[in-house]
Length: 88
Image (cartoon, rainbow, N blue to C red; front, side, top):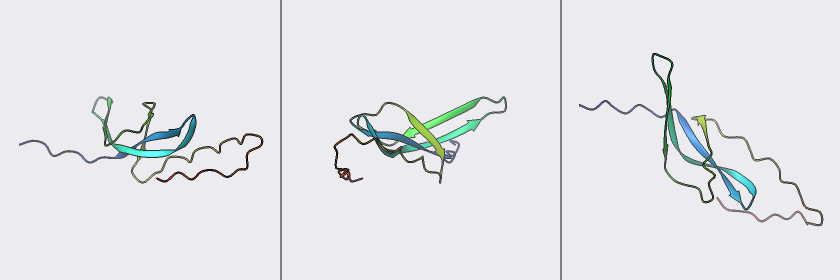
């Protein structure tokens, strides 16, 4: 009989960009981190989806924690400050 699958302990997040601007973090999967008796750390990441324009960078955080908000974008001189709202 196969060993039951161990529960996931972390969520995987990827950065979503528009052009060169970092918009927000998007949850892309789940992960489990294991340490064996010799101290070897193994990370299992299961991605459910991909993010268009993904750089390949993923952030693993314990379930229940959210990644930090993106830094505010610098405004170009002469812009009105009315930003387009991007739906989730």
